[in-house]
Length: 306
Ligand code: AMP
Image (tube, rainbow, N blue to C red; front, side):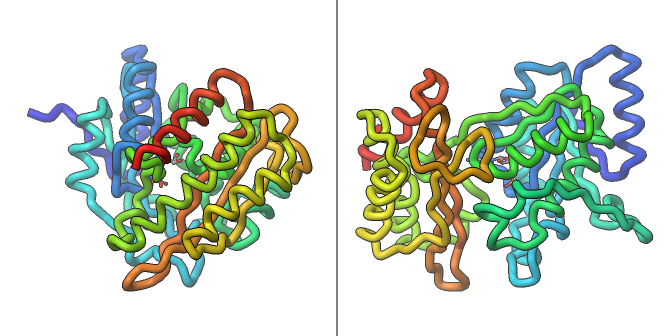
């Protein structure tokens, strides 16, 4: 029989925290919006390997969706999510309702300035305030030793690291590399929206990053050259990105003319589907440090196979 603990309210989580503290058990935390896939699974497995207990939160956060975004149609699959989370090593699920998270009278919000203005932030007004508010609230409720976030959402990760450092949060933030399909497409809950033609086009997104990564690993560091090469892959597939930019990965407000230590090449691309366009985001860190170089080589080889 399943030993997975299901928690729905703030008081359930509080009782869990007291129980774990008393038992001297370490807790890892993986925040998600559900519709779980193997990418989330990787975060859960990493937490399970490093902590006694792993809590996965499943909450589609209304505060981070704009009025024209997909909040109501965002996939909600709690039963299959629970099974997937448990199979990767989760020991508890926190699935609150909107009223549990934001009870009547809730008036607070959290903002990380500047970092929220660039890349996705330039097109999704208020999105990162919604993310910060829910993440800080979740971190405060769960009180884990470590929390796990994907590099797939690199800007989100940068903002959360800044928020936790600025506000003195004690939960350590752990970053996990992007999990990709065999052809390089980053796993995403939104891939479900793609039809067959859209899926073929979507492959151009990791391919455009791979083209720049290949040039970079051969010694090219000029942003103009790398961006031009990357854009040409999207154009070959009749795509035009919402943004395609090269920034300083350690301080994303800086656009860089030249990659020096760690460059962030980030892209957002809409893909047409039979219903509404599906927005995909992806990125790579251009760096020759072994950790990043391995990631770049893996991406390049995946995009070559199919
Ligand atoms: P979401 O449910 O989309 O809000 O994502 C929850 C967490 O999973 C975030 O930290 C994401 O960055 C991470 N994540 C989503 N997709 C991937 C992926 N393909 N690889 C690694 N982490 C991912």
